[in-house]
Length: 226
Image 1 (cartoon, helix red, strand yellow):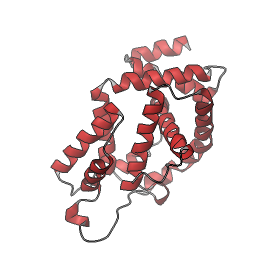
Image 2 (cartoon, helix red, strand yellow):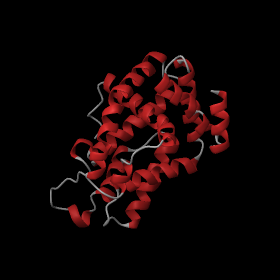
Image 3 (spheres, one colour):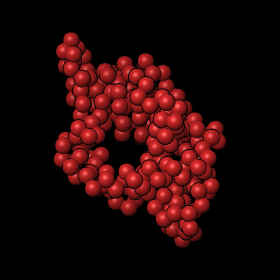
Image 4 (tube, rainbow, N blue to C red):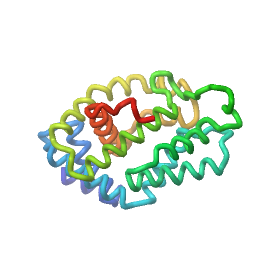
């Protein structure tokens, strides 16, 4: 593990990225490589250090904006949503009404959707992007951020998160070509075949997402975000 960390340090000098290595080993190789308690600490380190970096939050916000963008959305709407998403990534909090309004202005611009009663769903039907789905995902991420940041992520929950990941990830990988073929542009790029570095770099986000959904489900809040 030390040699792997040393190699990654040369490629990714920031500590938040290095914290992903033990997460990757724990997730894909098990407790013999990294115990769950150490994986919890690694997730907290990755999250805490990443949230102190507004540039990282802005880059993540740009990625989300690309997923939600409509070609006829205004630059004003895009800039507003980018600002709000950056704040979400940096603080772990958001105003639901404000974010819904901003997301709709980009994803379903009034020049196209006003008065039609239509609701946009982009991408493959099984993984379609909608405003409601985006808000649920955002709430899950913020819930996970609070749980991890405040020390409320215990080993039992994190072990359950790993089981969920191991159960769902293979099906996703088996179908990612199908998902990519259903659309183009940002959606197709989101389902590109992952390289090893992608798998490592995505560990934190994927685990954090599952933590959020598990907590929301346990609290009976899933499906009641919007």
